[in-house]
Amino acid sequence: MRSSRRKKKVRIKWGRFILSLFVLCAVVLAGLLFWPLPDKPAENTNTAEPPENTVPEPPVQTEFSLRFRCVGDIMAHERNYIAARQADGSYSFADTYVYVEKYLKNADMTLGNFETTFSGSTKYSSFPRFNSPEALATDSRAAGINIALFANNHMLDTGVAGARNTVKVLRENGFDAVVGARAETTEDRSAVVDVKGVKVGIVSFGYETRIVNGHRTMNGSTMAADAPDYINCFRYDNGHVYKEHLDNILNEIKWCKDNGAELVICYFHWGTEYKSTPDNADKELARLCAEAGADMIFASHPHIMQAIDVIEVEVPYPAEPEPQPAAEPEPQPEPAKEEEKESWIIRLRKAFGLIKEEAQPEPQPEPEPEPQPEPEPKPTSWTKTVPVFYSMGNFISNQRYETLRGGSAAESRAARWTERGMIANVDLVYNRQTGEVTYTDISCIPTYVDRDDLHGTPYKFAIIPLLDDLPNNPMLKRTGRVQRAQDALKAITEFLGEQYIFKGTT
Image 1 (cartoon, helix red, strand yellow):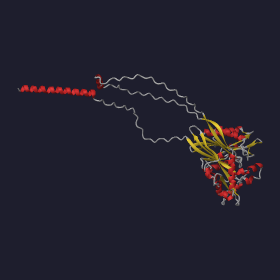
Image 2 (tube, helix red, strand yellow):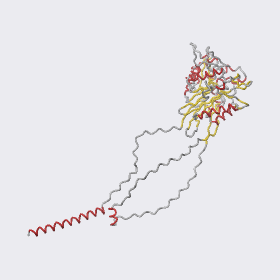
Image 3 (spheres, one colour):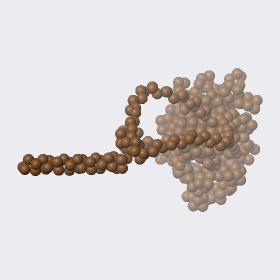
Image 4 (cartoon, one colour):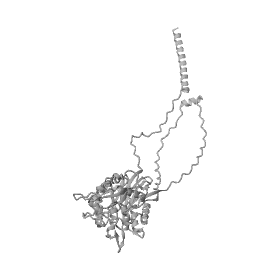
């Protein structure tokens, strides 16, 4: 009996085991068939390392706003340097500039022509052989003139040695460049100066007089044989600039360009004294210089002002660099791709009909591109408007109504105009990328030279900017010449045109 009971107990356990095993298999099979599959992880295609924190580079400047100013002839007649003599025997011309220096300093570059020499000798002299105290250079620089032009018909008044010493004196007084003559034949005849990051070339020439007995002359006197080696000068020939000298001028413009100049300024000492209109030869020279690359032209010599004009020239855009073929990268072996195998669970579900094969869409024909309009051809050139100041007149001198009214007919007619001058003003925007120059203002600040000759000697001189409050100017109040200055402003405005009168403050 004990044996039969034991056998019955074993049979009952195997039955339960088989039933449990069946239920477990059913649950596992149901899970395999119906349990949601995990999402397939997205492939990480970005294998590059995250960039380090770097400071972004500042944008490259392509446009530059610049202001250029230029004054006419700086002269020192005897009355001028006597007035500058101080009690201790030294000289100071600071009073001459006291009212006008704010205009000279409010520019990125201010140029002025010295129509005198600094020979090193203290035996000072005036017309017809100018030799001035060096304080004139010192005080002109302190007043705001930073480019010294030395190109005129008086540059050989104290000989070649005096001209060379004048260049040295101007350099010693801190001018950024001295143009028009040189102290040594190994030096350049022109200059390239950095102005707020823009390279500006400066070319300066004065005229010489005719050939006499086979010799070149300046101001009617025979030039030393070596003078042309040190000074920039040109001669007229039958109503035109002499061909060889014209080539010299154009070559200096080219020299500036070849030495990195992005803008070029030309200054000329030309024209006919006391004549209010430019000569045809000067207009021709101005056009040739503009076509050769000059961006503005300043001039003086007639002792009175002449017109302000503009010359339009077509300038080609810089050639675009030809695209260079990119270097082909070296072929890299592609990493072996493991064939993606279908899991057994997917195959199982497909066997039971729980997953159906997706039908592949039939390829659709690509739509034809819409016709695009042809791009307009890019312009190959732009029109540059080059300002020309044919004569800025005297900036400082003793020429005036009182000294010239009894002279020649030409001097008498021009007497009042010799005391009137201008500060030429050119505001522009230069685009380095295209080479374009946009002139935002072409104008002048009219000036008048007042002389205090009513309170004993020595006389006192001052350049009066005519756009200031004239009735309250101390010098004009002392001399009683407010009306004379106002008349000068009116005459200059009528002569040049309202559009060429500076509209700013300083």
